[in-house]
Length: 330
Image (cartoon, rainbow, N blue to C red; front, side, top):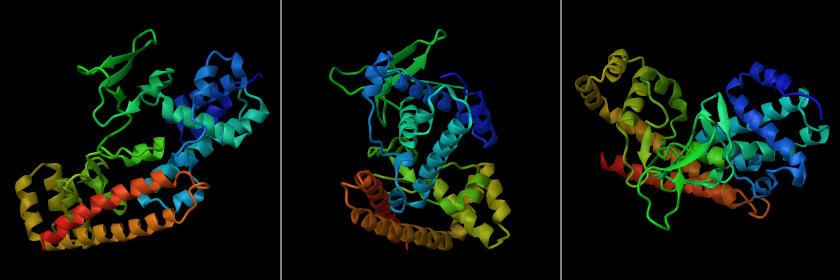
């Protein structure tokens, strides 16, 4: 089939998806090889790919109703990106048959293969898939690093001594925040040392403070509360109440002025503690409701329920440990 992907790429640029163009090209390549059937040199690899995915793109509306707000937002972003790809594919002039480009199920499968199997060579510029290398599982403490040399050869390098019989693993994302990996890949990293504190209504304040999702964490093992969580909830409290110390606290955080931070933290501690308790209590009530809803579904017709429940249970168990710590403080 004659055609090119240039028109589709222009459409993606118009919706602000320029950084996704490398992924789009991989998806089109997968579809082109799929059309060749067993004549494609990639046929054995393509035929080994999953038919069922568990990530955000693949979730039904019923699945979304069982997700906490943070991970639901991440999953919705992936679903939106797929929508952009599917629309651009069909409004452009790709080198694919109309039947292939118009099949939402087939295109979604190719999108998921590209999304979950690629390695980043240069962020927003180049992504590659190297069959067999894409089979490495994720590890919280990986022992293999994937690189590419100047000629485009893929290299799998041991990061340390690996005992015989050990599982070879790579890093597929930040182990301190498993929700993005859940939304992108559809698995739960239950070895993760921490999870985002689910302060989705504090994102403006996080930006003010210069904090990211990987900073505002609760520890999964003990319910440890990261110092940045206390900073965030105090700053939000001061800002919402137009307190005269708002600017002082913000500057103390930005300048690493620990003395001023501690003085203000002690001054407002009862109020910060109460705000954090309310947040944790409210999150636990919500997660309980979401777990009950997910468990009410028939798992034969909703096969993604187990991983959704596992994610929500991890959030619940972690927040219960945090809750115990908070109530021990007063």
